[in-house]
Each structure stands twice: as structure tokens, then as C-alpha cells.
Image (cartoon, rainbow, N blue to C red; front, side, top):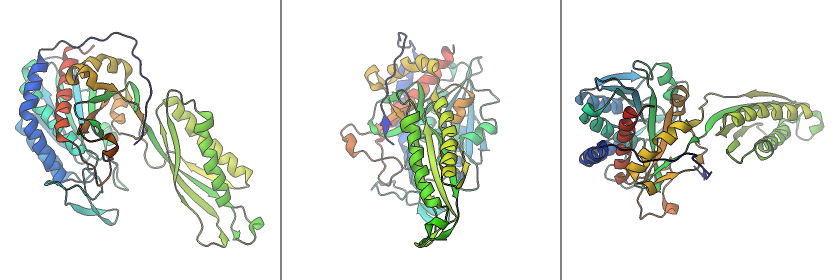
Amino acid sequence: MKKILLPLLFGCSLTAPVSASNTQVDRLADQVEGDVIKWRRHFHQYPELSNREFETAKTIAKYLESLGLEVQTGIAKTGVVAVLDSGKPGPVVALRADIDALPVTESVDLPFASKVRTTHEGFDVGVMHACGHDTHIAMLMGAAKILTTMKDQLKGKVKFIFQPAEEGAPAGETGGAEVMVKEGVLKSPDVDVIFGLHISSDQDVGTVYYREGGIMAAVDPFKVVIKGKQSHGAYPWNSVDPIVTSAQVIMGLQTIVSREVELIDSAAVVTIGMIHGGNRSNIIPNEVEMVGTIRTLNPNIRQHIHKAVHNKVNSIAKSMNASAEVTLPLDYSYPITYNEPSLMRKMLPVLQATAGKDNAKVTGAVTGAEDFSFFQEEVPGLYLFVGGKNKNLPKSQAPDHHTPEFRIDESGMKLGVRLLSNLTLDYMHNPK
């Protein structure tokens, strides 16, 4: 994912939070780090695909139960949720980790490398935690240990959400955060705020990256079908050529972002990633099908692009005597991962106190997507990036997420554990 660096200004002065708990969190994080690494390696060695995280969920639930927490399983098929009740009045803080792996065959030479294979959409594939969800599970389990140990210092409740299928449910199924929300994961007790982290393979360990507003894009897949009139390829004048029409549609769609969208504050993307039409060199077909994706970081721009896609496609088709059908969204749709600005300002001192002021850095927006956004549509939430790259490794050599070469420096997880713990403690003592 390429990042677009955008400025971020806060119009208020910020002071570091005063909390005697920070020292205790640091001490407990040191103590639990070995377990966090052990847990991460276990989940990495035994990954499971979206909506198939059965053993992963059992391992998580067993540990949470050992902490004396109230645990629910089978939410959104394989999700696990646990509640820590302080016994004192206060807000409900939710912490979320995603738990699914990807159909990727690992190439990294690790003693705990995944050797798992399974069938995915009819193909024999390797399975790998190639996006760091194994670290997310381990960090949240570590935070659960710390917060349970510090129960007497809490006010309110903590809800630990281990979410399946962030990478997308298998064909014909539903899953992930959207289903968890529909099944009431943010209710009983009603969540006031939610925090989530993502490990980053190209940012140094010990750093945390934040942004107010849109930090990850909305994603809206779409399909366009251009219908024309078939003819012999030698006699194109007898046709209404959907291939030529589709070519003009593709070029027209690119002008939406380049000529209609004000990109000073927010990035946007319209991409056609697949096109099918015809079966012989000398036959002009009846129709062509195209499938693409829209990525936006601003709700108004998202709405404008949706309307513009319909307008461009239908107008160009009509000009070529063809017809068009637009399906938008196609099969799923993720909202913008949006860090509520006032909450971001409120919690920024916690990031600075936990990581060190120089290690809490503004990030550019990312045109990748995250279904954490479904939680943020319901309650205020923050989504942050935690560094997972060894400081001695040049950024240019850092492996990409979703690749067989993906790897992280496990020492970066301790900051994630501390952040989840400190964000919870600070918000509980300063909810307004």
C-alpha cells in the first residue's frame, strides 16, 4: 500500500497525561512480553483463513477464561468476545484484534513458519499470517493480562473483541466486523469507545503512527456491463462494439478523479481491475463486463464518485449506441476508517507518553481499507499503526504485507500492548 502524506494540524495545546499507572503498565508489559511472543509464534505456525478460525478461537477463549473473564464464542461464526468488569461505574472501552490469515504460501525461513495448506475457492493453497494478524491477537491477549492484573485501577468495563474475517469472508458467506456489529457486539454492555492497532512492516519498532479523520479508505467494488450488438469482426459497421465502448468508458472513469475531485485534502482512486469480453479474434461480442474498485477518504467525495461513475458509464454507452448496467457496490462495501478528530486530539498525549513524543508520528492516509470502520460507524474509535520493522533494516528492503516474504520484528509488539493498556486506563479516568 502506498501512502499519501498529508498535513495534520491540531489547533490546541496538548499536555502529557498524568497517570501513575504508566509505570505499572511498563513493568507488566516487560513481564508478559515473553508470553506475547510465544502466542504470536503459535498463531503464526497454525494460521486459519477467514471464517475458518476455529482452533485460533479456541486458543483465545481458553486463555481469556483462565483470566477469569466472561467469554462469549461463536460471534460472527468464529469471533471471541470477553468482558472485564471492574465493578465500578465508568465507560465501556472496547479493544479489537483481527484473527484471520491469508491464502499465501510462506517463504520466510523461520522455525515457526507456517506449513499449513488448505483448499480455498477450489485451489490448494498455503495459509499464512501475511498481514500481522497473529501479532494483533498476541498484543490484545497481552493487554488483557495487564488490564486484568490492574482491575482495581479500572473504572467501568473493558470489552476484548477478537474479530474473524477481516480479510473478507469466503464467496457466498458473510463475516467480519459488519456481522459482529449486526449481532450486537457493541451492545450489552454498550461500548463508548473502541481502539484498534495494526502492525506495520515498513515502520520502525517503537513507533506509533496516527492521523485524525480518514486514515484508511472506504472501498466500493463495482461492476459495469456494456451491451452492444454482435457482428463479424470484418464488418464492424454492422455492430455496436462493446469493446471499443468499454475502452472509452475506462478512460472516462479516470477523468473523475483527475478532473472532478478536489484532491488537496483527500485522495481517491477509481481502478478497473478486470475486463472480460469476446471469445474469438474475428467476432465482435454482444457484451463486455468490467469489475473495479473505488477508494475514498472523504464521505462527500465518495458520494460524488458514485454518482459520477453512473453518469460517465451511461453517457459514454449512449453516445456509442450501446447500453450499460452499473452495479455499485458490487458484493461488499467498507466505510472510511475514520479517527474521530476530537477523540484523536484527546488521546494523542497518551500516544506521546507511551511511545515517546518523537516516536508518535503523523501518518499519511492509506488507500487500503479496514473493516474496523464498521465499529467506528457506531461508536467513536481510533485506529493506529505500530512499527514492526527492525531499525537496522532499510525501509526499501522491508517486505510488503500480503506477500510470502512478510515478516515483522517481534520486539515491536510490546509497544502495542502498552498502547492498548494505556489508552484504556486513560480513557476510563478521563472519559469526557
